[in-house]
Length: 172
Image (cartoon, rainbow, N blue to C red; front, side, top):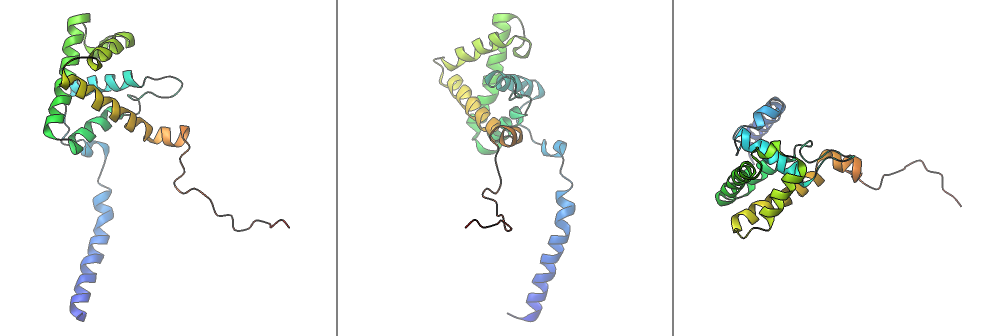
């Protein structure tokens, strides 16, 4: 390898490493929300759905931990257009059914009524409704179990298990 090529490569690498912290520190929660999949009303319904699936008890519920945003991000980034449409259509169907049955939006009805609507959707003969509920339920469980709160306070996850204790007396 020629010295000039090596020096040029090192200069480019050093410039990239110097600019990386400034680029990464510009991230915040509002800048990451750009390009969201659902409208504000649909996001509120999704938050209600995930809270109905894993409600608040002595631990925070899924809605409180932001699992609705996780579900939305996963469907947007990892699922095809058909699945994205099924999610949006399922939320609209759920809200419409809530208005029809209880004359209130899904977010305004009580937990028992929400559970009743979700159970009916799970047992529905419509494949899209079953796909909607299955996707949301699976992603809710995944998002809840991998949340920071659950990993640190409930499962006591350790990034690096099996600590090294260097100064330990040896028993003979």
